Amino acid sequence: MSKTAQATRNTITLKGSTKVVSEFFAYAVNSILYQRGIYAAESFEPQRQYGLTMMVTTDPGLMRYLTSVLQQMSDWLVTGALQKMVLVITSVSTKEVLERWTFDIQTDKAVLSGEQPAPEKSESDITSEIQAIIRQITASVTFLPLLSDPCTFDLLVYTDTSSEVPFEWEESDARYINNAADVKLRSFTTKVHKVDALVSYKADAEG
Image (cartoon, rainbow, N blue to C red):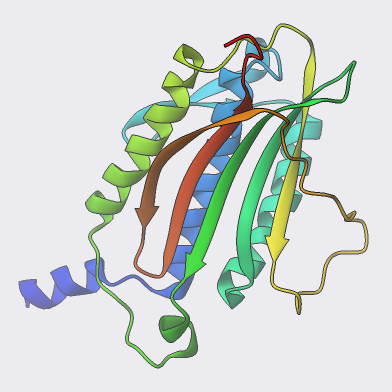
C-alpha cells in the first residue's frame, strides 16, 4: 500500500505539470524584475517557495498584468501550444533592447495525446531543478551589465500557428539584441513539459 501511495505522489499529470510550470514562470518573472531593478525594491515582498526566499511584486497594476498573461499561458500549456516565453528588457529613453530572458518549452506530445501514460518524477527532484534556475537568476547581477537607465519590460509569448490569440494582445517582432552575448541557464523537466532557460544581454562594444 505504501508503494502505491508513493507511486501516486510521483505521477505527473498534464494538469499538475501545467501548474508547476505556470508557478515557475510567475516566480521567475518576479525574480528577474526584482533582481534587475525594473520596479522599486520596496514594491516587492518576500515569499517562501522552492525552499528559497522569493521576491514577489505587490504593485497592483503589475499583478493584474502578470495574472492575465500567465493564465493565458497556462491555458496554452495544457493544449501543448505554448512554445516559448521571452521577457524583454528595454531602455525607456532609447527603446533599445538590453536583455532577453528566453524560456523554451517542449511538451511531450505522446503524454498530451494519451498515447503514453503519465510519467513519474518526484516533486523533490523537480523542485531541486527549479531551485538551480532561480539561484542562477538571483546570481545574474554578478555577470550582467548594470542597467543604469530606467528600463521597462515586455513579455513575448510564442505559440503554434493554430492558437487563438486574445483580442487585446498585440503582434510583436522578436526584439533581438544587437551585439548580444548569451548565457545558458539550467533547465528543468516535469517529464511532461521541459523548460530551457537562456539570458541574452547587450555586450560591451569595447569588450
